[in-house]
Amino acid sequence: MTDTFTLDTEKLGRYLAQHIDGFEGPLSADKFAGGQSNPTYLLTTPTAKYVLRRKPSGQLLRGAHAVDREFKVLSALYPTPLPVAQALHLCDDDSVIGSMFYVMEYMQGRILWDPTLPEISKSERTAIYHEMNRVLAELHKVDVDAVGLTDYGKKSEYFARQTHTWSKNYKAAETKHIAAMETLIEWLPANMPDEDGLYSISHGDYRLDNMMFHADRPEVIAVLDWELSTIGHPFADLAYQCMQYYMPKGRGLPGLADADLVALGIPSEQEYIDMYCQRMGFQPIANWNFYLAFSLFRLASICQGVVKRAEQGNASSDKAGEYGDLVSPLANIAVGLIKA
Image (spheres, rainbow, N blue to C red):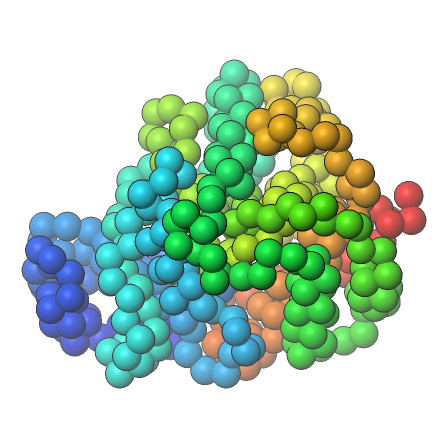
């Protein structure tokens, strides 16, 4: 851990003992490696483990790093069939550790980072992709009003609002001119598809490594990292996960573009889409390349934000600056899709 992210464990331990039932110190804290947004820590006491997620310190983009929204959505979803960790306490007093944070239960399982899943068998690869698809549909079937998330976001014009937001965020974080990003900033608003009144909870970062799997079974036990969640359009999460089919391996965000999917036992993009539509009762999706291009643009903008935070000295990882190398490739893939 760097000094920027070191926690005062004595002060934090005293605070948590007053706010979480059964919490007893002494407390130690270790920052998890990886992750480019909200710093995340394993908290260990003599009797239990917990996970803490905090806002970074320093200058932040307006509306970013909303750990209070993460706490809200986790609290709302915990009673549903969707697998999430139990949120235990939200602290909005910056004086405790220097920024807002929340604590949730610690869960033991597998995080799988490479979408080709080289560490497991072909049959389990197939099962894991089916499980991710099932859980995504489960998320999008949640009744936002019934779980108390009516005010979690607007129920219309998701892509228009998100395109505006991430265009603005990109410009605020821009460090050099990238022609493909400028093309997308112009093309996306001019080619918005009809949303057909569809809305759901949108995770915003639904991908393999934001899921925790059971240690021995191809079963998701927790969907992680809800920072970007809102009420949105279900096709956004689906397309965001399907980006991997267009991303080559070896550019920092492992992809499936060069993979032999049949040999690996991984469903094709169309098979994955069809599974989802069958679960949701949707007709074949029109304007699919729009949703892919939007997702790639949004991810490129997120990566640019990571670079900007690194320049400002408040990145969550020592590798944050490397994300700048991803912005142009992601944008170029998106431009290729809109011109296909």
